[in-house]
Image (cartoon, rainbow over all chains, first blue to last red; front, side, top):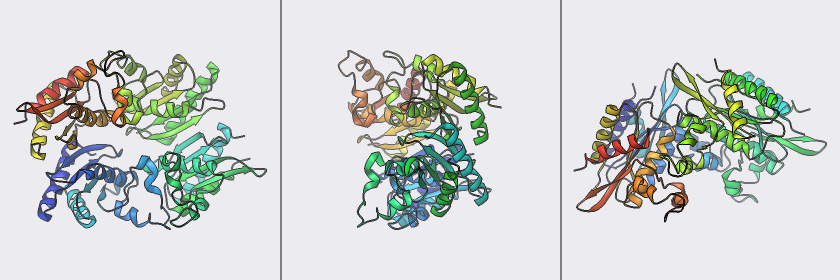
Length: 132
Length: 132
Length: 132
Length: 132
């Protein structure tokens, strides 16, 4: 089960990766109910990415899928095109939201925003390795 | 006329199909006024699909058309592109919302979300066969 | 843990009480994450109460308290006055939302709307007795 | 200037007080721009209070006043009655949001939600002592 302590460790792991990359990030963690558990904005991280990080985490748990993968199915002409207006505009369809799995079940998610899609994704993937 | 009892039967038929497919679904039914009559989330179905199932049902009755068909006319360059931000972002333009017809009139709709577009559509179509 | 089957039984118990009272109701059940699990609108129940029933259930889990009790602390001059605009206007502060407890923990909630406060409360309280 | 590190210390001080009181809390910190810097939900804290804690912090910086004090001027008949629907319903007018001052200037704010008004206020006041 997601706890505050686990969420903190996930964020810390993300921060370490962000520092390595040299790009300040917003990092959010949600629990199994897609509800926010913890959030940190590194100094200098984009203000507009606060909301995006939180909603990437929401999206990754809401659909038990990474936002990168969801985005691949949500382009014009794709099977989920238009999904981004659902859930009161909280569905993010670009890289940076990653579900956290335990024994095959999604138990929460992390959302990262503040850099390129590649950077956000790298930080999110580094962050979830701290789950245990 | 849509009733709670009919809506329950429609949802039950949808659940049976979802179990056959092996994918847990969110299933919603709206009445002739596009107002929610019944909703069920099968155990393990995506949380983000609660809103989507309800809004697919809304959309299918709101425009008396399947969301799959509406989506075909709502891609970039199409005649309805941009419709998804109308009605307070409740218009869903991908498969899974199907109107229920009686004597050529639309009397309600079902909305299904929880799998691929193909799966959602199959469950919705199975669900409406329970209307009588 | 809340399941679709349990939610259905809770709603059925609420419907039985509503029939006894002779007032059609909207009844919603949410899980431990305050996410909608099931919803039924009895024939003739108020349309405006669809949203209210769902949000009463949300509120009762979101704050682990009945909406009746929350309302007693949310009048002008009270410690929570103004709480109703939080959570995107989803906080209901009048009778009809009741948390479901198991071993002292809140595991979900029911929300009922369609009659007087007294009627809504009576149906909600009858509904949760079906939890087991 | 508010930094992530300072925000973390503020939250830690708040958590210590919350543990002393024995009531799990949601704690948020915003910077001089009223933008979220950090947030933590203690295990078992109310889900509905995530939004409230964040918005109490927003409010305390947005108006450079504690939400308790703002609330005293926002009751029916008061000079600011109705202010809570401004700013997209983000203005909280009950205890738990406290501005952080340095040399007479407000440099950020903390928002706490998860208990009674008195408890929220006590945790918020304890939290801001960690500012230095």
